[in-house]
Image (cartoon, rainbow, N blue to C red; front, side):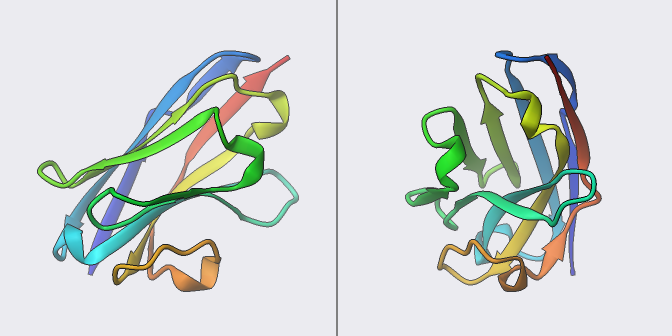
Amino acid sequence: QVQLVESGGGLVQAGGSLRLSCASSGRTFTNYAMGWFRQAQGKEREFVAAVSWNGDRTEYVDSVKGRFTISRDNGKNMVYLQMNSLKPEETAVYYCAAKWGYGLGSSRDEYDHWGQGTQVTVSS
């Protein structure tokens, strides 16, 4: 089993930045690709970004390209999401997720383990 715990959420003004962190424990961290998803109130959970097991490949939803950066530190069993130029419409609960294997994934169904989420609120 893999346990994931997110942190770093909070309230930020539009145009500001936040860095989310996700701590992993349990099974071997490098067996998993990692992803970030978000869910706004009343909407479905959507893919934001993913990183391969060794960090050499990343994938982003088009709306965050150039503003968000996903990274991981396998020595610390951590994954991060640096978010810059945040917009009010990006207010959501952000979830960290783990996907078994080496391929990236952008579908919720591909991910095996989920954290509890951290709230990000962007004020206008």
